[in-house]
Amino acid sequence: MILYPAIDLKNGQCVRLKQGDMAQATIFNDDPAAQAARFEAQGFEALHVVDLDGAFAGEAVNGAAVEAILKRVRFPVQLGGGIRRMEQVEAWLSRGIARVIIGTAALRDPDFVKAAAKAFPGKVAVGIDARDGRVAVEGWAETSDMRDVDLGKRFEDAGVAAIIYTNIARDGMLSGLDFESTIALGHALTIPVIASGGLASMADIRRLASPDCAHLAGAITGRALYDGRLDPAQALRLIGNR
Image 1 (cartoon, one colour):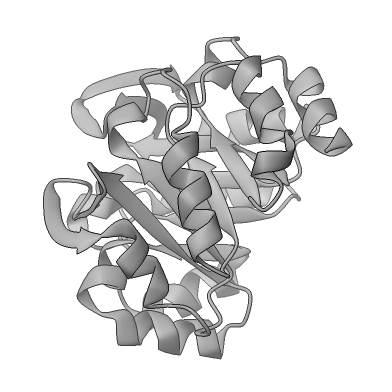
Image 2: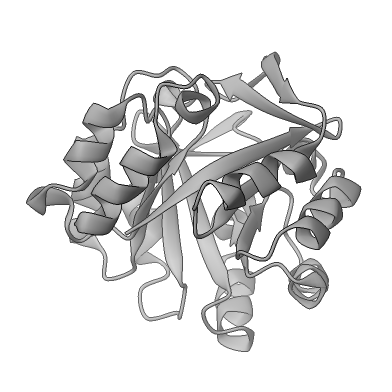
């Protein structure tokens, strides 16, 4: 299991939102590259980055901040937010992004996702962001009729490297991961599932290290890490011991 620290980018700054609401953004660092370097120095093995503005615009908006991060760190960086065309996938992978995350386009254009996963094995993940079990897109501004598990099953045997599953209601709220839904999704799919949204404390880390989460591939932590609710060394030790 990999524990990913998260950097969400808005207006070139490192922020955290509550339930995906851009109006509820807390700025944690004006220098995302410095924040990424701090995470790397703390011992994290990979980084999760989201271009929040890009998720609404459908194209890179915080590209300069992402490139600054790539120049500053050596650990793998996965990137999501507004990646909806093959040329965007190609461009980011050529710049050094280890894995792109496709969200809205996974619902709107699944054939594109399958083509990208085939063209770049191990480099394409699907972001499934759910509100009451239904997939939300366009920066979480729209909720579809598609069930989260049904979207995941679209990509079975397509070569997708991972599913990043977020319960929107819990994201940024420090209310704990949605273990029930995440574990159920993990059992329903053969694609590795990464938990996201609401990781709140060391109790969540201990749960991730328990046998019932053994099939999960990782988890993403944001606000709890910035707020000091998680001790990075202790969290990484527990995850590593699993």
